[in-house]
Amino acid sequence: MVRSSNYIATPPGSTIKEQLTDRGMSQKEFATRMNMSEKHISKLINGEVQLTPETALKLEMVLGVPAKFWNNLEAIYREKIIKANAENVMDADIIIAKQFPYNEMSKYGWVPGTTDAKERVINLRKYFEVVELSLLNNKQITRIACRRLAITEKSDLALLAWVQEAKIKAREVQTSPINIKGLVSAIPEIRRMTTLNPEEFYPKIINYLSDCGIALIILPHLKGSFLQGASFIDGNKIVVSLTVRGKDADIFWFSLFHELAHIVLGHVGLANGTSDEDEKAADKWSEDTLINSMDFEVFKKNGDFSEKSVIEFANDQGIAPGIVVGRMQMERLVKYSMLNNLKNKIDIKIS
Image 1: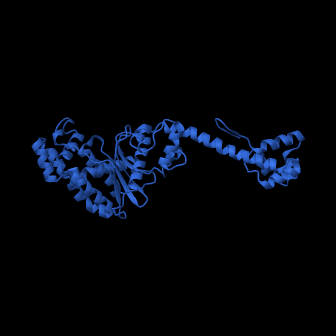
Image 2: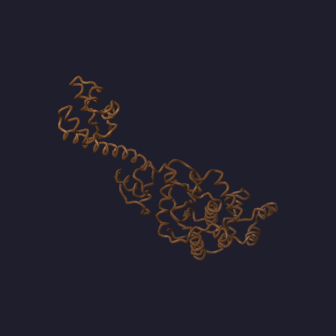
Image 3: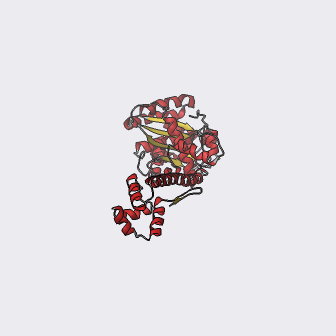
């Protein structure tokens, strides 16, 4: 028997059992008369096996109840099972759907606007391309490498929504076959672009990455996702998606290089996603690639953190001064309120 809010699916076996009780017939005798095993009869009565047309004819012979009756009873049972299960899954999905930032997703045009709970579930299922939202717990569906500032249950779901939009947008991007060696070769040139304006560097980065089989997608930030960026394999390409949260250029560059680190270090596409060690390794790679670690140690030992010194060091490194300031602030060499005049803002068109 299967139950839901509005349906009760009772197997035909319940009616068979009533017939046997009325006749005072044991299941053993009934099995013999039906020329079936006791085990099969037990499963039939409990609704564990389907009542076939052949079985319906046997029931007509043994119990005197027309085969048409049994066939109809089985059809009704199977239909109610489908409806009851669908209703139970819908009820569970409604609870899950409430945890998504649906209104915000709708504002960005990712899903249709609606306040109806069931319509939201249907829209989210279509958006994520799954038959039920509980499947989003399957790591085979959600394998991603990402950089976030915090993790909560709701932020995980917001992340999944954000990544799905990146996946959808990336399908429109034409790329060459994946070429990790080509990416490694392009890293120095991409690094030099930190000194350029977005109008200059963004089209160049798009071309460099697409030549390496990577689609770069920029999306708006979802509140509560604590998201900076994510990277994953989708089909025959790698998708790198970033948010322009806060529009700080140093955060954009660090996030971009963090995601490129996941690709270079082989973290993208891992069966269980990235570990804390993988995230730390990506952070270290990003830091050392943007700023030479030995040079930065010398800079720190000098102890001159004036605006002039920072600019000179940045020029020597061939990177934007704001990236140096961001690193200094992160390592608490200066307060977060200091040298912010050297940090640029970027305004990149959302994908």
